[in-house]
Length: 302
Image (cartoon, rainbow, N blue to C red; front, side, top):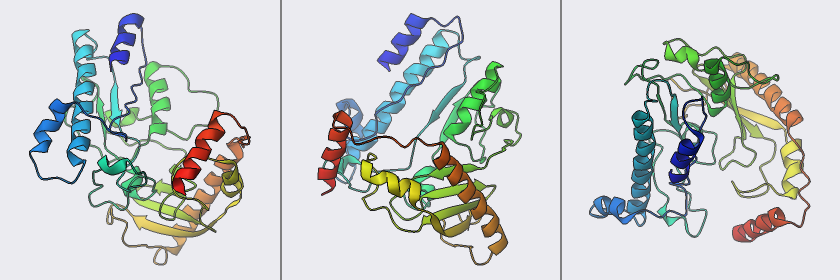
């Protein structure tokens, strides 16, 4: 946050600006200021839980510094602020030092490294006084891929001259639904619990199961041995859920909704094919730093 506020001071705020603040917190390895740990240390908790909650609280306090800065500089009314997370909670114990990772996805299924709702549904907060009503709540599903077209529309500039997966969120500010040409979709080639692709259409969500599981553990960097799997594995099975009636994704409706399943599965297969056609096939046989990182991680998984 020090770097972010310093950047704003140096750049000046008389002209339009776009500032991205990407916190490490509360990702492992977690280290929290003792003043934030003390309130949680007095409560019963699992080992490291007080450190995790303190880390979230510290991040919240630091983000508050940014909002206070915007207010002091008179930028409150004409600055759109977006706060969100990248994935659900990490409590998998994948790393020897990850004993401070805690949190819960509540009633949602699974967690980080998953395409079930517990892995990819996270809260988001937007602040723009005068344009977004304070305290308003929306259940419209949106994604970070929507931010670019949103910013372009609000700035009055055309989006890049290529097809975008996202859609502008500006209609939401007036209480209208988002107009999508491409359904929301996700791809994660070595997810932790089966599905490697997902598509959302209204209240319905379809997940694609690969013909064969990824040959290595979930998460981590992409190595040379992964490319054939990523580009060559087909979706061989599908699950279908109605998230309005079943947010915990407990009732697979693939058999009771065959026509809907067929249509959504076809769309998912098509979009996945388009994503792979656009994706680079990197040469990862280098002996440079990237290969060294990959080898260290390979040793860790062993």
